Length: 189
Length: 356
Image (cartoon, rainbow over all chains, first blue to last red; front, side, top):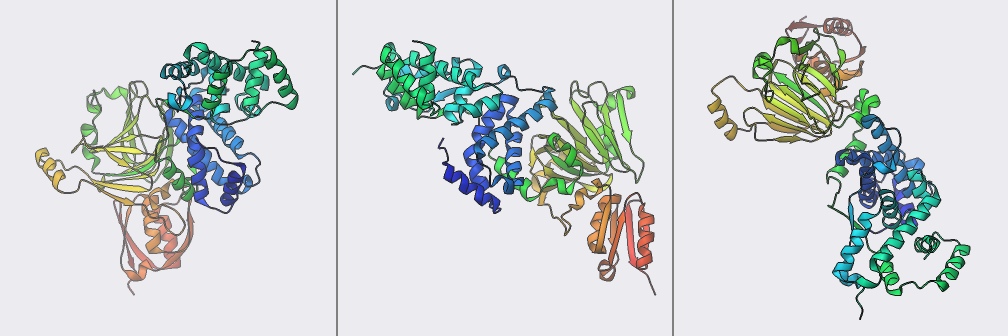
């Protein structure tokens, strides 16, 4: 997914503060899926995750004036998603904190052909297998950092972890990916 | 290779490494024999997206729902939403008529209400012109308007099903439970709540069943055509004729030829109040409003049908505030500001210009 530049985000914030609903729609287009995935991983329900993301964007609209000067809108959206998800957890599951071991994650696959990566089909399958075999904590961190482009500090704050943990887990993810590719699976010219 | 190397490599990749860490990494790499090809491949795949499989995505109507909520904030219409908003996924109003065969005709899968021992059935009813709030065993909250009744099976409700029968009018704030759907039976209509809250109005005098959805999604089926599922969207009102106790074969033929139901958009009045949900408020206030505008609000508030005599009376303007006052008291007070006559017969009210 294409990430918005800071300038683009700032522009959206400006348009939002001028009551431009199309700006909200664009924001929704860029972020809804990722936030939905994040909410889903916490709440384990597609239906509720949808409601949560809808609530997030309604909240953005309600607070659009305040948010116009916000420095990190992306971070705000994730935190709002987490907080609203927590509220739902409390309400429906009587759970107070997010337990990282209780997250539900879908299987992930790299959206690329073996040709694009210049590896064999087997190697690509192996990479996908490795990603999905990463421990839950490692996998959600990997997803949020690599795919969603969040900073280590942000992921740590979001999941109530230390930055050190995020560092370590990213190191583990990278090491395992490397191991998946090393020697045997690489096509030699 | 030490873990430190991987941590630093990852940090470098994610733009998290400090200058000092980059130097440290450089040193470490001198002593390590990193597979260059693998590194290049990882650089390449880092640029690619991660897809979830199976792909899970949001409902395509999500944006529309957001847009509706932004443009028609429900909390402004119905104060109850303010403290129960998160529970609510759907809000509907249902108007039901001819509920005389109600208990016999109610279809509870597996067991008919009529066949269940009365001990197992819990009936909650309200006297005319009163409102009450109850909580069902699953936590669902119900505001019942006057002359209304809710029946459910105390044994199976919440355990096996969440089905109730309704006469009259109620607002349902349903606790979410994806495993046991909340179903309302009223006359020939069955409403399945896809979301979580709705308002039901169900009086025996009407010839039709009106269902108005404020928020969320509900699914409606009728006994005439149980296979046909009608999905009602927010701000839509669906009107279904009450099934007449006639030859069922004919009904089937009719339903195929004549429209079984009509759907219309909701109209808000100047005060941004839906007359369909006006009764939900604690207080009905009106300020210099014509009788013509007031009539639908009164109809909802007092659950009556109002017939205004002529144009002249329709254009008369009134101001006031109703809380616990009865219809008679209200009309009596209004007569002080403008003399008119009224006649109440059952739930019908006729209002006429005073003859000079």
